Image (spheres, rainbow, N blue to C red):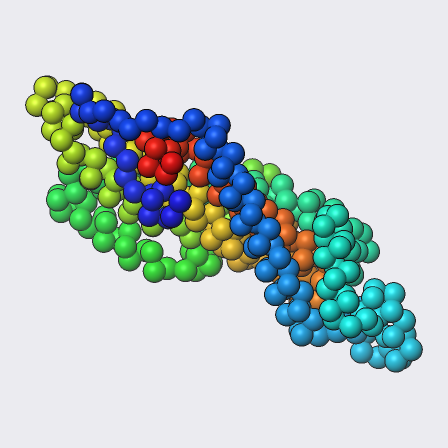
Amino acid sequence: MTTSDRTQSVPASSEAGTALPPAVGYGRYALRQIGYRLGQLIILLLGITALLFFLLRLTGDPALVLVGDLASDEAIERVREFYGLDKPLIVQYLLFLGQAAQLNFGTSLQSFRPALDVVLEHLPATLLLAAAAVTINIVVALVVGTWLGYRPDRPERRAGLLAVIVSQGIPGFVVGLILIQLFAVTWGLLPSIGIDGPKSLILPALTLASFLLPRVIRLTATNVDQAMRQDYVRTARASGARPRSVLGRHALPNAVIGTVALIGVQFGFLLSGSLITETLFAWPGIGLLLIEAVRALDYPIVQASVFVIALLVFVVNTATDLLFPLLDPRLRSQRA
């Protein structure tokens, strides 16, 4: 399913008497999609791990990071031999693939613990931040997008849409810096570093949500506007249905589907924004861990982090592919 397929407005209801094409069984469809996605995941992981493995080895010698620049050549060689860094690159890569197939990404060069265990310890913080950002996107996009898309010709709504378009060009880290300056430094209302209670989540979540929010609002507004122009909406209006009823029964279901679809499709982009957000707010998630590991040339942590992130994106995208045909069987028939 392409991005445009998922985010396109799908009518929540159709006119009476319109026959829908027969849909394939959902179980069969789901198995086919999961198999297709698993094939993509294997190819993706092989490509990412190969590229990452060889590029990381070009950034520097981790043995020097571990023992320091003043260490003797003998000490450096012993460290290289201990971690297998003295072997040819192709041999190191083949050994790495064999270990990775067993979910063994080696031992962290900093903490001397299994790399995957370290990454999984930081995963809940990233999931919490991502869930909060997704919730903000859905709630704000539905409220603001519905307001913009319902009777969009009014001057105040045109101005609002223009403001959303302009805000789309503001980088997320700029939003984060502004929030820190206002709420943490100037007014002292919210913390801006680490996790220290529920209030610590507010600024990072708002910052991460800003990476996608303007686009999600625009899509929601477009879907609401398109839904309100459909024939079945005109029929409902002509039959005396109240405007709120028409909006709630026809426009909002389309807006919800399109909004959630876009967020699912762009989840990988949202996670890339978490790298910046977690670094900016010292949020102890995978993003901050990955940045620190790159600086320290901690290869095992970097490789385990990328694996977990790729797997997380795969799960979300697959769930997105399976969710919307479940909501509307017509999507299954279109792809049968």
